[in-house]
Each structure stands twice: as structure tokens, then as C-alpha cells.
Image (cartoon, rainbow, N blue to C red; front, side, top):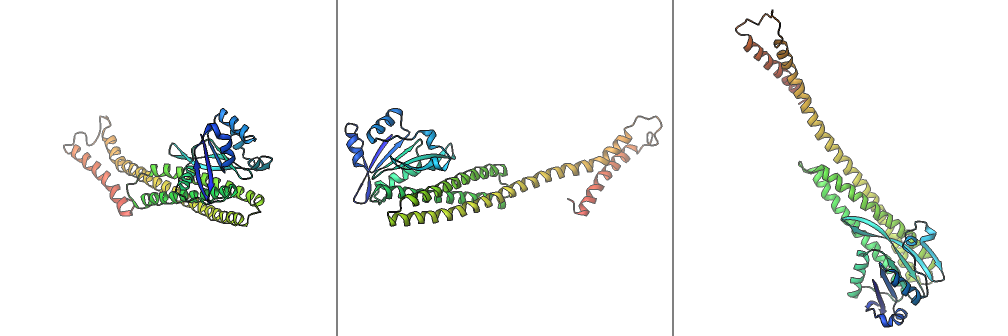
Length: 317
């Protein structure tokens, strides 16, 4: 899917794509956004823009020199973004190509960050004067969205903390599953922040001409440092809750084992008495005794109650 945006009077506006005059439109707009383009769309844009668009494998490269570089077609930045798939967070790389006065973005997934950015543009909330400011603004909004993600994780951890530490009948196994998912999301957000930190450092070196852009990039870098500290705090909280949940599970299991152990100790002496009087020897003193049966029953009851009272007295129950 191809979307075109033009900067007019300091605001970003969407432009309807007209296939018959696409070449002229590309020369007029400041942002070309491509989402999951097919081969025909890629070839068409390459011929119109006179530049090679990066392939998916190239965008996913993890080596720094392959993710941020400058060539004849412009400044290239491949940035990690977060998106949700089947209720879990995943990461995908987005290719940014900054030319003289045009920004090209190429991505394989529909991202909430871009959808929110377009929504803000429709509301007249995206202020910029050129493609470079547009790129910096997108990174600024990306970091803000990551802060919102971290805030959501923090609220989820508060709910789990209340459930695990204060509720008596909480589902501890579900809490462990939720904590594992939150840990995975927090780790991916931290990875995206680290990647954004590298991207901002790269842009600081190559966008030195505009003092306002440089100042904005430094502010973004400062925000990222604060969010990185917050992810560390969330990791510590997750580890604490994970340890606490496992501890409560062990306590519950120990209580169950304790009950079985006490039951075994309580029933062992009566079983010994019953085994003794169940022997089939001809000469047994109590065999012909009229009170032999009541005596055996009474002895078994005493043998069972005595260990229970002893444990109770010792405080083991």
C-alpha cells in the first residue's frame, strides 16, 4: 500500500494517490510511505524515484553499518518498531530513506505508531517544515509511544502484584504466564529503545546543519535514557514478582506434602497395631479374649490420636 503526504503551511497533510500522475505527485510530496509493497509497486517506485529500495533481508540486518549509512540516494536508517501479533509484542524493522526534501519509509507490517502518526496528522498535530524535521518528529513520537507501552506494563505489574501478594485465592500459574509475557514485551521495548538510541546518534552526526533539529534529537536521546532506566526498574519488579509467585507456589505445595506426611505419621501406628492383630498364629494371648476386639480398636485410636496431639503441642501443625 502506498500513501503520500505533503507539508503545507508547516502541517502534514495526506495526498490521494493518482496513478496517472504519480510521477508528478512524487516530486511534490515530502513523505512516501510504503506498507508491504509488492514487486510491481517496488519496481514502479524505483523507476520514478531513481533509487534502489532496500529488500526485506537488508532491512532486518543487525550490523550497525548495514542499518545506518549514507549513499548517493540519501541517508538510510533502519529502525526497530513494536507491533502486536496474537496478543504478543513483536519487532519489525522499518527502512527510512531521507533525501533532499523527501522521506521514504518502507515497512512490512501495519504498525500502530504509523497509524497514530497519520491520525495526528489528520488532526493537524504534526508540525514540520521539511522532510528532515518530519523524520525527527516520527522518532520523537515513536519514543513517546514506547513510554506509553512501558506505562501499560507498569499498570499490568501493579495488578499482578495485588493479585499475588494480597489475594489469598489468586491464580499463581496464570500470574507466572502473565509475568513471562510482560518480561518478553519489556525486553523487546528495551531493544527498540537501544536501537533508537543508535539511530539518534547517527542522525546527530549527519543532521548538524539545523540547530533546532539537533536540539530535538538531544532531547529525544535524554528521554530514551530515562526510559532505559525505567525498563531496568520493570525488569527488577518482574523478577521480584516472579520469585514471589514461585515462592507462594512452593509454600502451597509444601502444605500439601505436609498434610500427606502428617496423615502418614498419624495412620502408621494404628496400621502397625492392626497388622499385629491381623497375624494368623494359633497361640495369641488375646485370641480367645472377649474384650480383644474393643481393646484393639481402642489401641488403634490412641495410637493415631497421640502423634497428632504431640505435633500440635510442638506447634508443627
